[in-house]
Each structure stands twice: as structure tokens, then as C-alpha cells.
Length: 140
Image (cartoon, rainbow, N blue to C red; front, side, top):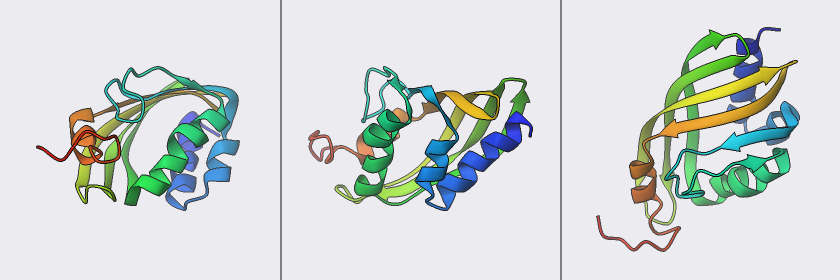
């Protein structure tokens, strides 16, 4: 299976809400780097391992968002690296603010396992939408 096909399978499983299948495709020591300025991990420091991604991100997405979707649009094959362009959409429950943000994900794939993830996204849009979740008040 090509690295692009493997990466597509991750997005398909996530889209179905099959988080166990997503986590099963991760290497046991996956390095997950959220974008610097992301409300969940503002310093952009990584999480290591599927359980850390589940606890620090995936469970929060389910509790903080209504209708959160990840829509990959373009996959770029660069050998062990797969770059994915797409959009995040959804509404943050605490603020009622909708998000429609462009993203770029850079994956490292080895032996059909997701080994590394780097996110790039408009973190200002996420910060504004998630201001209530993180106690930042309601001012624009």
C-alpha cells in the first residue's frame, strides 16, 4: 500500500468516527505536533504515542465541538512524507462560534504506520472560537 493510501485510510476512519482504527494506524511512538498557538497546546510541544493524542486531543474534540469535521482535499506524495491540504469545520459548543479553517498536515509514514504529524492551521480562528473553553472571555 502506498503512503498516500495509508494516509487516506486515517482520514476515512476519522471521518467515520472510528477512533480505535485511527489509533491502530499510529506507530506506538508517534510524534504529534499541533500548530504553535493551538488553543489545546499553545507552545506547539509534541505529544508522543497514540494514548497521548487520544487524551490530549481526540477526546477534547468530541466534548468541545459540535459537528467537527476534517476534510482532506489534496494529498501530496513525497516518499515517506505525505502532505495533506484540507479544511476543518465545526462549531465550538461553549462559544457557539463556527470554524471553517484551511489546514496543512505533514505526515511521516513508515511501514504503513503513521510515525509523525505536524499541523499548520489558522490558530487565531481556533483561539477565537475556543475562547470560552480556555477561559479567554468573550471579547472579539
